Length: 353
Image (tube, rainbow, N blue to C red):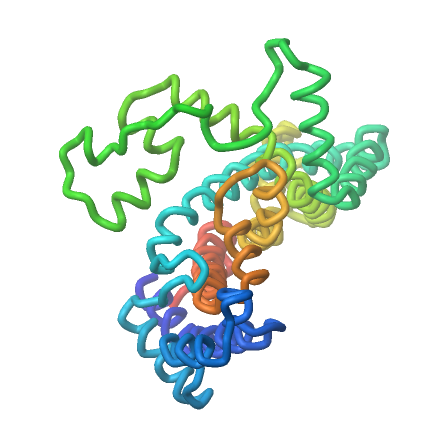
């Protein structure tokens, strides 16, 4: 297993270099002048010359790229032109919001998508199967922003004053300022502990404030549900399709011929092998959820990574675009590695050497 992980990490080095090149290029092909976007009416020729010299935009493009690679190697992602704040600090502050939202959405997608797919696959061509397929098609077809606005209308307007009313914006109730767990525990402050403290649900558990945990969870339900719809539909369809293929194989018929109960045949023999393509979809969905988070965070007023990246693109904030895109791309590489490792546990035919 260790050799497999090391080999996969080594094979990721060219990929990571390509990611560095791609993120650098993406930031540079954004239309517009960063000086004009940052200084606006104060963007005189002399002011722009000073601006470009300060941020190195007047250097040759190759020199800029070499400097960028060197800074990334030392953990320096630059400073936001618009916010005048280090990009690493922005990541520590806003990545936890997007990560919490994406994980919650993926949890809902798997929790609902896999059972629905199994139910449809074991009742092929029944009303349940047809209803699942129709629901999955609707889930894929409805845009995230439409569903988000619809959920806000239902749970904030139609259910206003009822026990089912849910908050439609923000991460916590205004005025709620939870104490970071590292202050409660007396732990020295560092980037990692600050990152963990910015995950509201986890921080509330660590300081034993269940009222804050419930408040954060209620604020998370609607955006997570809106974001989970598309991956849930894809997971349900993939589970159904894969399970139908596996149920027709010889070893499943043999298990039934031996007199095993249908539940045992489905759960122990068929479902495990049918989950291989589902694992791939789940792994890739976690990365694509970050893209969907841009609209979701805007609709539900969440100050996360997606909304910050969108604002950075509008403001030609090169360093934020580079840093945030780099983190997302590296996240994809890590998720693919984890997916490959999970494969070895699900399928004994996959050999790790």
